[in-house]
Structures are given as structure tokens and as C-alpha cells.
Amino acid sequence: MTDHVTDEGTPATYSPLRVAVLGAEGRMGRTTCDAVEAAAGLELVARVTRGDDVAQALADSGADVAVDFTRPDVTEENVHAALDAGVHVVVGTTGWTAERQGRVREHLARRAAEGLDLGVIVAPNFGLSAVLAMTFAAKAARYFESVEVIELHHPDKLDAPSGTATHTARAVAAARAAAGVAPSPDATESGFGARGADVDGVRVHAVRLRGLVAHEEILLGNVGEQLVIRQDSFDRVSFMPGVVLAVREVGRRPGLTVGLEHVLDLD
Ligand SMILES: NC(=O)c1ccc[n+]([C@@H]2O[C@H](COP(=O)([O-])OP(=O)(O)OC[C@H]3O[C@@H](n4cnc5c(N)ncnc54)[C@H](O)[C@@H]3O)[C@@H](O)[C@H]2O)c1
Ligand SMILES: O=C(O)C1=N[C@H](C(=O)O)CCC1
Image (tube, rainbow, N blue to C red; front, side, top):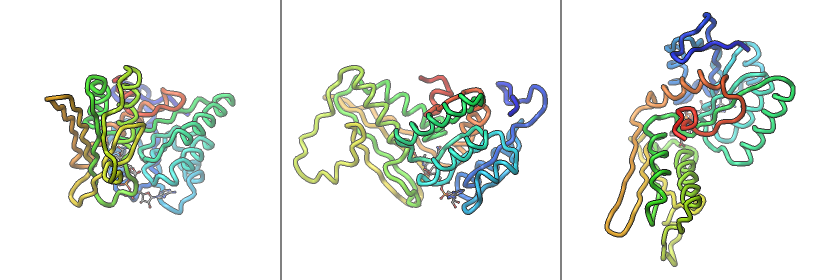
């Protein structure tokens, strides 16, 4: 494992950071391969696709960092394979429950006890507009009586609600709980299916529509006023500066980091 990068992403002593992309034939995987190939100081050493042996591919390529854009049902297995191979991991795939995060923390602790400090960054959204929207929403949440989240995505998406909306709702709920704010008022007695998912007490609504990529609105309401925070990713290239930043940073951050806001020092 080598230490390769400066803040600018320019190698101090030139030795490119070797990157493997898992899910390389998917929508995000293809875009990530292009971004890695275009980024200073990064070298794309493996395009790992479904059916490949992840551990073998990482070993054969000598990767320093694996980037996972696969599926919610395989991403945890890929992370454990990468940690076994001594490779840092950047994860964009969704589906990271508290239990999954806990198992990865335990695995990282075992590796650290063996003398290998590895980093894993899990980010439900690498888009700057999305990370800022979540951060602003969490800051605003304590000042409003009501808050609900609407996420809007392309119809080929496998999971609902989105990882971004789940992360947003959890952050909003935590901020309101810390401030002692009561749950959003809701007199609903029937038709609960129309009220969306309940994420830590925050209602989250999922729209799937052809033509969309990834979008989120956080609605905050008081008597006589409303604040709407909205972000739109119109193109998957919007995620790439965040992905490249995480790839450069992950080796400097041992342990599990959940959310790009921590890497951007927005927390
Ligand atoms: N964090 C973010 O900013 C962000 C942005 C967009 C999408 N996502 C998430 O990324 C994930 C992928 O999204 P997508 O639109 O690229 O999906 P996709 O279906 O286009 O691509 C997933 C790819 O992974 C491959 N795959 C499946 N199992 C695999 C395995 N075991 N090893 C290697 N490859 C495997 C599939 O064959 C497919 O090519 C989703 O969970 C999505 O929600 C996150
Ligand atoms: O296209 C997707 O799928 C996306 N998934 C992430 C989520 O679930 O939040 C991020 C946005 C795009």
C-alpha cells in the first residue's frame, strides 16, 4: 500500500493510485471508469463485472482502492472481499443498513489489529448539490413543525426509498431529536400507503419517472411559511468530482466514513 496523493491530487512522488471499479459495465461504473481515467494521479487497473471473482480481480490488478457501484444485495460482500485483499473501498451503492455498517466496522477493526489500517467511505450520494441539500435540511429541520422528503429517480432504479433520501431523513430526524422537536403533525387515519415510507419518523415519498436521473426535495413547513430545498442531478457526471475526491481521501481515513459531508468537512 503506497501513499500517493497531495491535496491537488497530484502525486508527490509519482506513483499513481491504482483503482479498480466494481460494476464497471453499469451506468455509474462506466462513468466512474471514464472519470478515473481522466483524473490526475489515478490509474484504472481493473474493470470488474458481474460473474468476476472480486478478490481475484483485486489481487491480480494490485489495486489500492476499489470503487463499488453494483447492487444493494452484493455490495457488502464486495467490501469484505476488498478488505480481505487489503484494499481501501469507496462505496456508492445503496442499501447500507446499520447492521451492514456494523459488520464492516468489525472487519476494519480486525484488519487494524493485524496492523493494516484500511478505509471505507460509503456515500449514498456523491453529488455536491445533494450533499449540500442534505446538510442544509438537517440544519433547518429543528426550526420547522413539519418536514417531509420527496425523492425522484429514473425508473430503472432497484431500491426505494433512495439511499440519499434515507440518509437525509435520518439526519433530519437526528437533528430534530437532539433539539427536542416533536414529530411532524399528521392526522391521517386511513390510506397510510399514500403517506410514503417512515424513516426514523420522517415521511419519505419515492417517484419513478422516465427522463429523470436523481433528484430530491425536502419540504419544511411552519404556520404561514414553507422552505423547499431541492437538488437535481441531470447527468451522472455530477457524481464524479465526489467519487474522485473520495478515492483520493479514503487511504487517509482509516475506519468507516458514512456520507461525503464528512470528507467535505460539512459536519
Ligand atoms: N452514491 C451515489 O452518488 C450514487 C449515484 C448513482 C447511483 N448510485 C447507486 O449505485 C448503484 C448502482 O447504480 P447503477 O445505476 O450504476 O446500476 P446499474 O444496474 O446500471 O449497474 C450495476 C452494475 O453492477 C453489476 N454487478 C452486479 N453484481 C455485481 C458483482 N457482484 N460484481 C461486479 N459487478 C456486479 C451489474 O451487472 C451492473 O452492470 C445503485 O445502488 C445506485 O443506487 C449511487
Ligand atoms: O440512480 C440511482 O440509483 C441513484 N442512487 C442513489 C440513491 O439511491 O440515493 C444516488 C442517486 C442516484
